[in-house]
Length: 194
Image 1 (cartoon, rainbow, N blue to C red):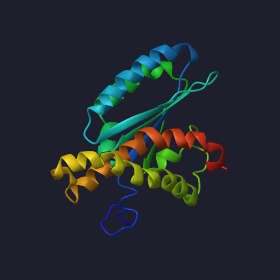
Image 2: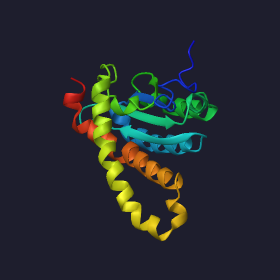
Image 3: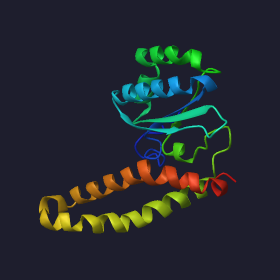
Image 4: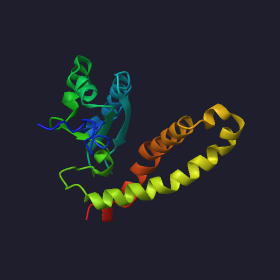
């Protein structure tokens, strides 16, 4: 079996992280209890090594399916959280508030950005994913360095080759993952998932 994270594999960078997509169908009379539990499990997950954040999609009025995308730096870290005793204990505490058993998927790379709430739908074509990602990152590669330029001018150590690039790259990734991409994908979902 080919190691998708092996050096030299063109998909290694794309596949390096893992997102655990968890769906819960919550009983309508238990939504408040579930929200309290959700805050608790989010805090607990954040304490695990490799945790990189969580994105919650709450159901629209009249629906009961909550979806959480819990991001980890790699497969081992994601599995450690999924198989942990504390997670199993927390899930058992909320089981009576759920209409069905939880549904779990593990996705590599950035696929979770392009997953609609009910992920049985097909993934968008790669060219659409490429186009959306390029449309977001391209302007950021021009704007973010310009914003940092006064800082680089005042602190020459930060302007050092490599250091400067790391600061710019980290800023762009944070903006893309946590701020821009989740909102943009929702906004263009009609076209993206067609």
